[in-house]
Amino acid sequence: MTLHAEQVTWSRNGVLVVDGATLHPEPGQTVGLLGPNGSGKSSLLRVLHGLVRPTSGFVTLDGVDLASVGRRHVARSVASVTQHADTEVDITVRDIVRLGRIPHRTALGGGTSADEDAVDSALAHVGLLDQAGRLWHTLSGGERQRAQIARALAQEPRELLLDEPTNHLDVRHQLELLELVCALPVTTVIAIHDLNLAAMYCDVVVVLQEGRVVAAGAPSDVLTADLISEVYGVVASITRDARRGHPVITFSRRE
Ligand SMILES: Nc1ncnc2c1ncn2[C@@H]1O[C@H](COP(=O)(O)OP(=O)(O)OP(=O)(O)O)[C@@H](O)[C@H]1O
Image (cartoon, rainbow, N blue to C red):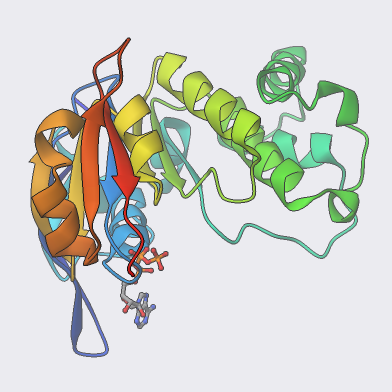
């Protein structure tokens, strides 16, 4: 079992932001949340994390309504990286990553060597081990993004919720990050704008439009020229990757 959404609706100021979304990831899958700006991807991730309560429907963790699961239990199981993680405090990269260990600490305990091992391992995974002593505010946007990913990895979650994690990353780090995420033994839901990266790395893609799920399934079934035209209003053509067979999307210029 994993984190499931059942007919989840979330309204804000009378506007239906998420409209009846159902999500049933298989354990270990990487699920891509796609859709235009404002289609509800971040909001659905927030509902899945239990940061906001659904207006109707429900989210379950291992079959139990998230509303009745303790926050600490959720924090031990679910890690998230949001789009605007930031801090003004003078804090090092290692300190940021250590935050991921908080849900695992006992009431009395400070950090243990197991905590430090998890922090080192997470830093190594994102290629920041040699930058661990640097201050947060001196990092580039991409380095901050990788530090936040390391914080989520240090949490050793079973479920990972990522909101546009490839933002700010150069192409090598985009590919490395998604390869890392796919190789982790966790279930990942990842809001992502790049349809080609979604096609390369996601087992399943779920397309949102105005808060509603309008398509879901394997990238090769979902990412058709018609769907892309309907949802994004752009002209695209689809070929297949010669080696792995996933769709490769090419966009046409408007003349
Ligand atoms: N707390 C809030 N209060 C009011 N409206 C909100 C709130 N959060 C989100 N919205 C609105 O809900 C809609 C969906 O926003 P959301 O950020 O979930 O979309 P998104 O698909 O993640 O967009 P993007 O691709 O631009 O990041 C938008 O119209 C947004 O303005």
